[in-house]
Image (cartoon, rainbow, N blue to C red; front, top):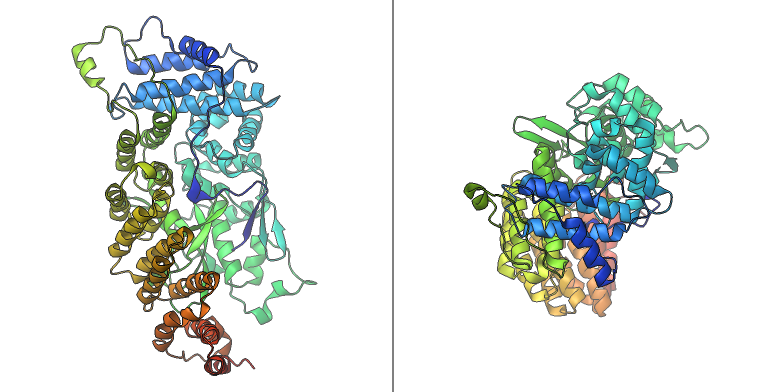
Length: 630
């Protein structure tokens, strides 16, 4: 796949950091400022009105960029904590959502510096719809200055249209928050600017599959991370616009072998455009690039996928979001290799985090697009609330509601009444009922990990497994990895990952991946016996599970080399090699890509490390002879 070049430091998606470190304030100054900002006089008659009035004071348009925004941000955090401790999110949705939006908006203002802050404040006050969507999409560990610049540029170019198309605005902010380029072989493609993309999609709104007015920014991100130029996109839209089923679009490009590939000749290489790829043909990577970029150009969330099937041969293909009867789902599997969608490295680039992500990780996110806007926002508010619940030191003053009728008083009973991991866990359970495949949810579970025992963590893994078993079973592994990031006790992590492996009795490739996670954790902790046994379990489990056995052996090889015991690898490679048969392929050039050949290389290395160099030479002679390598 083309390599995405991000000029900001890479963000590792599995290690979300949503915690916002409080800015140091003198106690007296902060306390006075916060108390003044949170006073609602006269008291409101509903929690929603109370929050609305408090937010109006915190984000007062009369207050300029020189104000003490750190104190106002602190007030927003305390307001959110007061809402959490005073109400039930299922009955006070708007209050919870507005409190989260205010907190993140204030944090964005704190982040903005110099000449940027006045311009951002203008957006906050003149385009509150766009501002709310952006605030409820961004997280504190993202490149906030870059996102702020995109937001301001869009506002200064298109004015109120950024609120009319608020989800598109938010998606552009989180994807284009740093300068991007895409490296494809020797060609570097500079994507269009966020402003150009905004205009492109707005002008073609009625023919897009994606809803750029009310859809999920998380899914629109898979459209606006396009690498093609605007000219290329215009051609693609005029040729394929309005099409919904793009599954076979890459088949329009004629496949060319390496020997007659026009792109290999530097002197006569055509310009790297979608039109030229269609006209001249290309290898499997260019065909996949064509499919994904056409999809994005016509407004269909699209991904470029790379993976291996059971023999270890590499494939590239393009996947698309499809509208089904029961909502939206990714059609992102290689149509010729349905049985191997989760094996070894079915991966794409996550448009938001600039990192490789598993196909299951991306596929499960489609459920976000089927949520109502309110549900999506409430899920975010619940996740955000867990952090103030666990990190703020002082208890907030209770929210007083004036003249509450009896039935209103009953409705205002708090959902939780104390702070800590248990109550934060309850909030996340509520968020999971809204959308169990929200990746931010699982990162938040990971932050709670130290406060949860193995039984509670296994329950959480069961939530992921039940919700994705049919379509994306490998998502359970992603959820487990995220949920365990905050677990310091290795024994607890081992128990959880063993349970994960047990869930996949009918999918040995996925069970093997769980064993590898366990082994990697044990190796890092210095539990060498547990690590080796877990690598052995991974290899033995994946013997009949296709190409993942290569990863299992490779991880074990690296571990044993670090331990100074490379000869022990032979215990793992011998049964695998014994179970493989030499493939019968007419094209010898394909032999080196097969599982038989690649395991043979590993087995030969293990034989050499064990002092059996003669046997190693016999293996190498056999596999290289079959491949025509002399």
